Length: 398
Image 1 (spheres, rainbow, N blue to C red):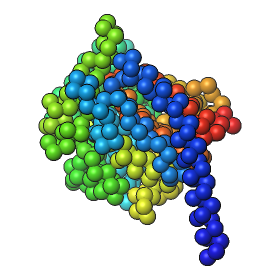
Image 2: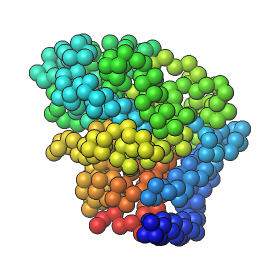
Image 3: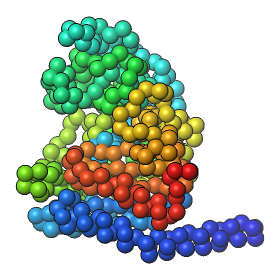
Image 4: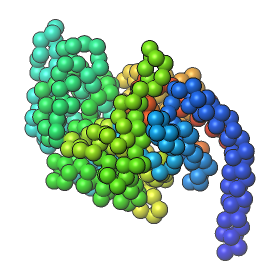
């Protein structure tokens, strides 16, 4: 009993010392963030740092809406776009643990229209030799992509899927898309997690929103994570911007109180969620704690470890030397690479409006950033994490 009490007191002293030191050194973080906001590159930014399950920083900078000069605060709701993917991937793996499917199962076992996918051979569509497996969807090796390849043979077709009004309609359109390669032969970022979202609906008979609410959002107390904004929360929604290169300033693309997120019927598993910093902190804590949040088990430790390890082998991953992809997350596999920017085993993902997070299991570290600027956006996240590493004396190369 005395030893346990001593350990609790010692851990408290260590945390208080670490927190005080971090707080005193955070001016460097503040000055960099202020610079991006003052020069008009960003409307606002939220940054959270969690170390050893303790919140060291959760601060807001700038505006949720520039014209109205509404200050950003920790309760604001952001469009997290592709940071939806890790959440939906976790949801699908919850069903995997319960025995609903096997990772090696062909997708057409559950979605029959995916049995006869095609790809181009000398500009002629031919039936693919391989079939897409569920693991291919989770790790983006299915051959499906997005409509930004620069090749009109693909892009014109891929852009059609975004006219869908429901998840089922999306999949019906997706079945006719040309694959970029035979399933399993390469890695390409694409609409895979949207298919995972519909697969959850097929397996459970529930809507994706209902499933996520009961199995992830409620257990993790993610009370502000949804596919659409409710009218009683609209004052907390951020406006979204893009950067006008000609005028060198931010341009409004979605006003917080006049937004497409009022009426959403297609629940995009690949990029449809809105969320808050506090909600995503809870999700990230669950990941850091190997599937557990406040004594609630969402996934087994072995499943989290599998999802956050390299699952694409030697396949080329184009988004950073020293990086690979797991099941829903990018993963650092070579920390000595100049682009890895973190220690081996660190995983995370980002969204089209600049939101980004990382989880570093080795150092029990979480860093989350929320912004509201559409791609391309400045790479401020790596600068901020470098400073966080420096303050906490984390050497990412050893």
